[in-house]
Each structure stands twice: as C-alpha cells, then as structure tokens.
Image 1: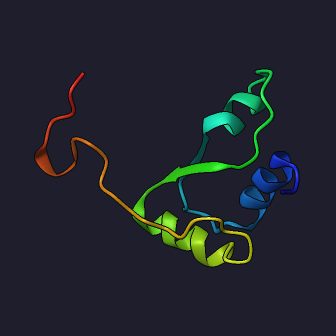
Image 2: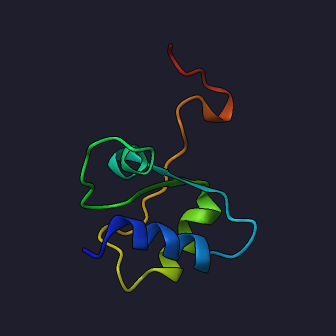
Length: 80
C-alpha cells in the first residue's frame, strides 16, 4: 500500500465538502506521533459519507462498505 499519509491526504483533497470523517486505528495513532507503522487507513463516518468515500475510492478499497448503526442509535443505550 502507498504510504498511509498519502492516503489520508488523498481523502482530504478529494472528498466533497460536507462529508464528515475521521481517521481511526493505527493510522490515527501514527498521525499523532505514536511509534506504529499502519498498513491501512480506517475511516469512521456516517452512512452518507461511507458510500461517498466508497464511490470516490473504489480503485483502492480493500473492503466494501458495510454500514451499521452505532451502539446507542435509534433510542437504544450504549453500555459504559
């Protein structure tokens, strides 16, 4: 895979305004200076963002979008 930083920069450059997303996992730790070497970029976003990202990056997606509601959505409660 290309350098994880290149992938994050491509996300920032190519996603349309209004798509809310965050880098998670080891790439997030590396961007914050932790001593880890990511081999992928995990992205957290809402359902619209997930399908927008999938369409924009279909050439390099490893796993197709599988959206699920976060715990606590739709009136449920998340356990602490």
